Length: 354
Image (cartoon, rainbow, N blue to C red; front, side, top):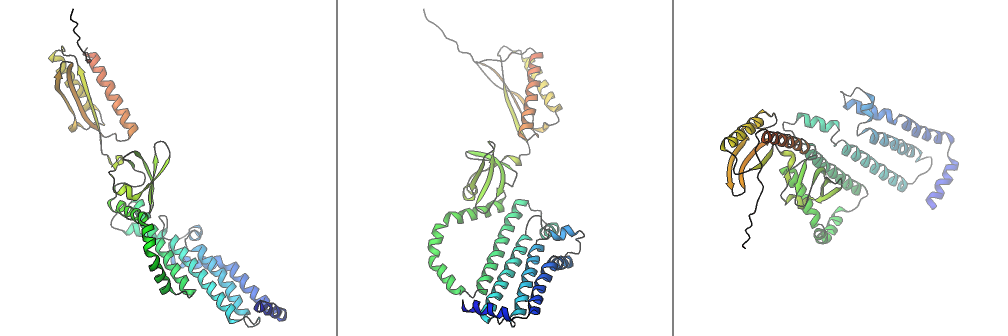
């Protein structure tokens, strides 16, 4: 309180010109902060032609904030002697200025590591290998976390906090933290396994155990799946990395299979005609893979003759697949009707003894 009281008394004795100059410094930096930030970013972004692109840069707002704070800091330095500001207050002011500068720089650097940032786009363009967005976003999250960790260490150093003692303290409580964070560690490791093996990516349709749906996001801890009931399911990465996952989006083709049960008294010639016509019908369809088509009289029993129709279609989308199956079924039914072939039904003979 004594320092604050002395500070107020000194203000009363301060010449008006010193206050005007100090306020002028603050206003100049406040007014020209955006312009200075614009010029600095422009110097490093030669290809940026539009002012909008520069202002949307990750470093624009942090630089603007830095120069505003710099103006206030320089004004206080200018007023130090006229106001008789003590060294303690100036040291605190300097520490605050340094911390804000570190935070502003770290935020700008972290924001430059995003999928839509110019830096990342340039790196992806020059990279020899193509990576999917989910893998890159996961790596960028790690980079951003490391940036903030380094910034936090720098801030602690500025505050003159003994990091050795802090690390020793963490070592004492490390066992407790490790035991409590076992599941988190498993999920983090599971996340790395997912990105290394790449069993699926964002947008893929997967099926696993008791659920299936579309991948919406992959984070450090969980994988978010949008189910077909339109609910959002968060599955721990440790579970997914140890489970059998069916990725339906990776299918190159879908199987069509049907068993035609025909009456036993159907003439052999009719069976041959049916086989030939079904084969011809399948070969004519654009979405059918010809080399996979099989139509065979494969078995018979007391209930009838079985004609196996087996093929693959490149209509992998579920809706398109169902449409293709429906069209094939219609065609087969039409052939059966035209050839006047009767479908067999399971029968059971019951004998009653008088």
